[in-house]
Length: 216
Image (cartoon, rainbow, N blue to C red; front, side, top):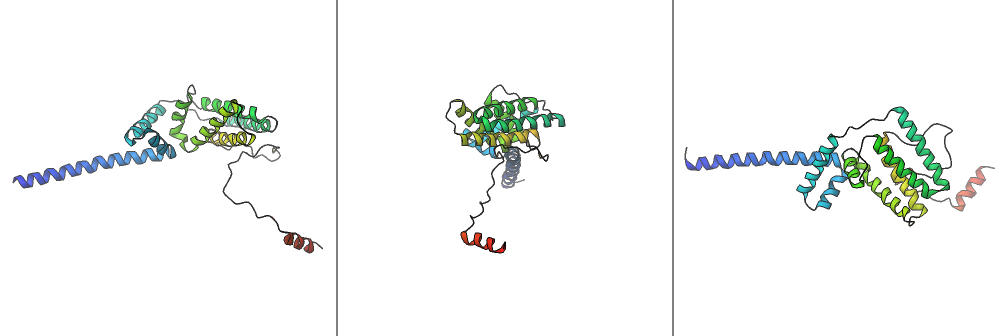
């Protein structure tokens, strides 16, 4: 075999190896992006280095695999639904206390599901593996809760905190925390996630007159 052919073969082998390595790395990256969703981009931005960020995310997956997570029984789910409805009712009379209660309730639920809750940052890291899509809601709620403790959160801030808490709460609960049983509605704040639909246009005087004429 001539030296030229040997060199060509070596180059071909190296290209194949490089392609395999790249394919494996790309597959791992896609898996991390699929698992962590928006949290992937956040960690990459915080780390400033994609390799270090992906190392951190893989470490999160390893820690998460060691957790003994628990699925809630239907009885436990109903107990938490009832507790959440009480938080909403409490909000009417005392928004500040209601947000504190919501934070405690979410922490209790996280604990019952089997997640460690000692350190807030570690809590976020552990939750990010299965609840990445709702994790930003938890961050927003926690930030408002801290401002509430400092006495600098408005009533609207507190309402938004309850909205954010509800999203993660429902994700952990595995169901909508608000009961849909007829006859259980009460005068509680709207904690549903606002949609992007525009509000209906205000009725004009001509429309009102037309409606009056048709009723004669």
